[in-house]
Image (cartoon, rainbow, N blue to C red; front, side, top):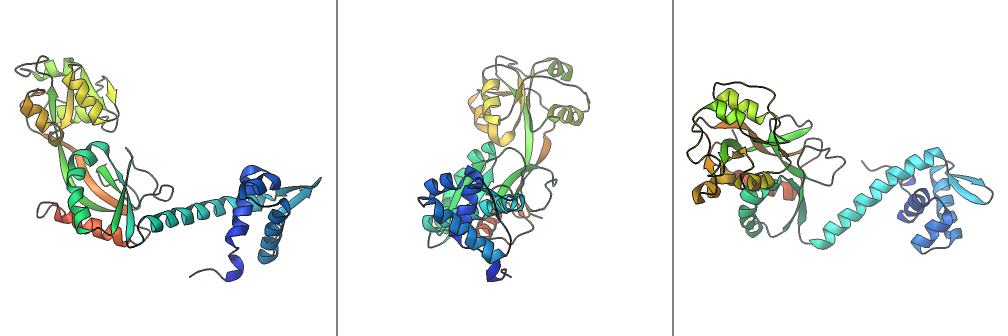
Length: 299
């Protein structure tokens, strides 16, 4: 339920309050909003009358917001920004809606992007806006409707749609080990490349091969794309998702360093906040995405 009218100041008054708080004076706020200083004062006075509280402290002919008014101005700033963002969405796609999706770089480039043309064909009314985030974030603080998440179901306050299990392979440049490694100890002694979002990846891989180790060190990367290039150029052995290195293995740019069981370090999910209703564009994307998955993949 929307609050009573008396608790909803005009946009002009909110803009004046926000500008005074941010810029520190009525004169600076007036200049930014193309108003007179007296017009700014009138807007604040109107808000005081409407809300029945003091917003302004006057000293030596200068306006200062009360501490409570400064707190209110911060809330107003977020609300005005949300309204502006909603207006941009509306003008960009007046016939439909938009979906702001956070993606992981490698998954977005190699798995999602090749399929998005089909979504655009089926849902021309939805505008997709993609942004990159490497780790979970607070949906309340970010302008995203949903996100692609990797790992386990450890993101609080979200719904999950399972997408794909990631299996990793130890790979290296051909000249690094033309015929692979004969002993796991040889791999352990070689330069190992690590991804900072999978810090225990190598330990989990060795454990799955029946040779648990601890305390492994090596070069650290924040994205798969950089680590793949480092591996191709012979900097070490990397654990890389099978779907990402299929072409490099096929062309001979990379070779498998060990012929053992594949290991999964986690799964990919579509996640969206559980504390608000899914929008039409999100429902359309979620339903379409389910249609891209093998039968039974979301069970």
